[in-house]
Length: 172
Image (tube, rainbow, N blue to C red; front, side):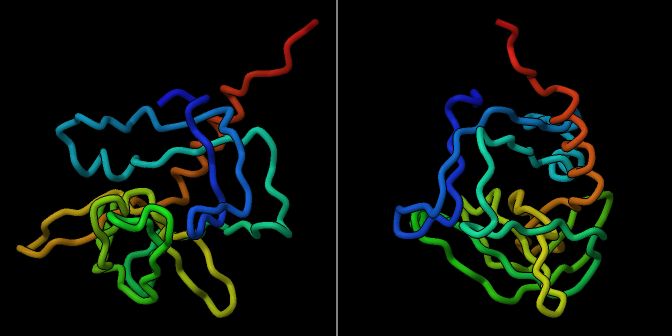
């Protein structure tokens, strides 16, 4: 998808966003291959980082931090815009991380087509952090499970790529 074709809509509810920003840069991992045969590698790297044309003020939409440790177990929640809900988010308050293997998290969250890209949150007291992003689903031991990636190292790499590939101001 071309950078100019994307608009980030924060706080979208009932078709209205709290803030909208044009996207000026996309960073993705070289290890991500949509058509690749290695499903583990694809899921573990299925995230992108977007640079917005201008920041969104924290008093308009407070940002979420990234969970600093990959989760191997524990409760999480998912907010998604799945099939039939493209303008209204759905919250699953509690689902569980069942395990992690090579940067891929398996969860028992109830997601559907269109939930890909949804944030997976971990709550620690009053603090809520993004622990993963829904990549899709996989059948594990005969049961459909939601999959996502471990974020800490991947986000560090994507931030470095954003900085390295940034287009500077043009000379006049």
